[in-house]
Length: 469
Image (cartoon, rainbow, N blue to C red):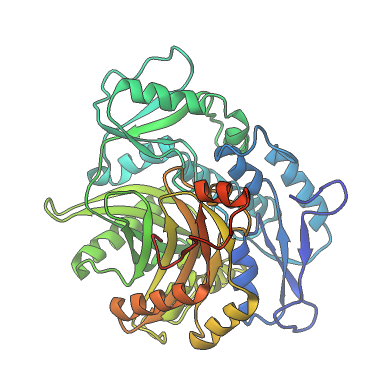
């Protein structure tokens, strides 16, 4: 994280285009996808200020790689700092694609500066799992499983009505960390112990909730829910001027027998009438919540046997991993919608006007830990972009480090994402296999790496990415 004592937490980049004096878009808690996608968009007269605050530290904290937050922990102080830094600048929009704390922080800053953005209170209610469930139950009760708030304080009693097995997750999390099936009270007691000491992780949400909604979290940090079954999807959309619209429905595909994502497919394979019901439910839900002037995504589950749609959770932000899926199939990148809303322009996304009929975001993942021996060079990546001009390649690994040294979900090891388009799923998967082979990623089993470091040949026994990805 940048040293805030020496420089502001953002740095300007060259404008996409210029028309008179460029206006500035403040990208709060900017991500690597923001840096990759925004400069691709031809937006004359706009330049970007990329802001950084706490996200990386929070990831390390929840992942067990840090004992406390370094740098700014109080979001209220950060709001005051942002106001001071942008004073006198021509700010065109305040946007964020960051899950935590970016989207909530951006909503507050937009409100303070009088710019378009979701109501901070609504954003925060969506993010707090229990408050969100309470609101969902009042709007779409038919789609909500039973749920219970869990106090993690030592000696706190469990809700009397709780019925195992349940699915448990923290009131605020990301990357599926801490989300797990719990089959008995003893397992739940073990899960509670993990979260009781993570005051720093919940601090930004606690402080913002106190400011905007006059509620707190305290030690009630977990939520238990009835189990859901079926096919999981993400319904993504946006609200502008009181009107809720849908961008698309994306299928979530898991590795068999796990909760680890294998890929995300667009368009969804669900029947059209089911998708229409999901879209109508998302409109009713987000409209009922009062969500406006922002993007959102609602994770849902469809049980084909019961013909039942259930809501998993709401994310009051765009799903940046899906942004170019829509571009490939529909012809509009979701970042364009983000900029439109942020600058007060009604979005007009295209539909089925993209180069491809199908697109998928495929995950490179292992269920064993490995030492990263080799990663693709810039020349290799350039060659892939020449072969597949619309490809997106993300490498979430570092040569010389173990996969477990990066942010992981606790059950598997993700080390890359490849997004491609094609005629259909079969063609995309064929292209994915080709790309994976060309990447040249080499992984060495951790136990073997220890013996190799003791004097053996380091290249012996390396696993190429066509192995257990």
